Length: 183
Image (cartoon, rainbow, N blue to C red; front, side):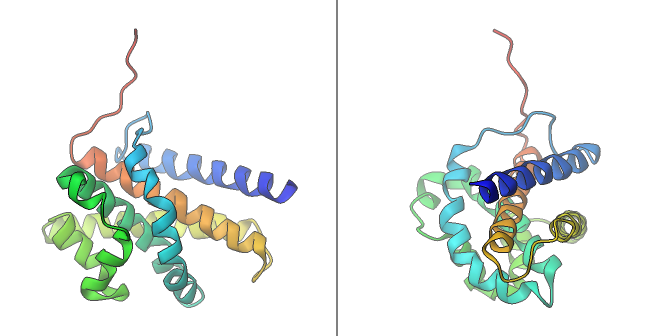
């Protein structure tokens, strides 16, 4: 139980770190989006992503983490485009990855899913890189012992927050603004 509480606390702190950064860059609204459809896809995406992400983590930690930011953006775009269709896709991560492969997934998501031009793609790629480095630094500061269950759960928590951050950035880019409604 103690380890779960520790991981939960780590994830909450990472969420705040990433959110504060994205808020300072005006990439998200102060209020986090309530997007249960997007959150519902997380578990399946995570299970499919883990083998690819872990394989890449040792040599390319920023890629391993940053690609999940792109996946979150991609899922948010698909949610907006035609969720009736895409909600039925069992594995949205594999669907996006398999078009050009893992190494080029970022380009595919920018060009084909988000439909960004060159300048916008460069801007989003820089943002994804910045948050991936922040997330990697936060993960390393925790001092998880490599190859332990705790390290694995810390990695998954990091991916989760990057997925949610990517989705939130894309929702705002598409014009969804989160504001508190006073009743």
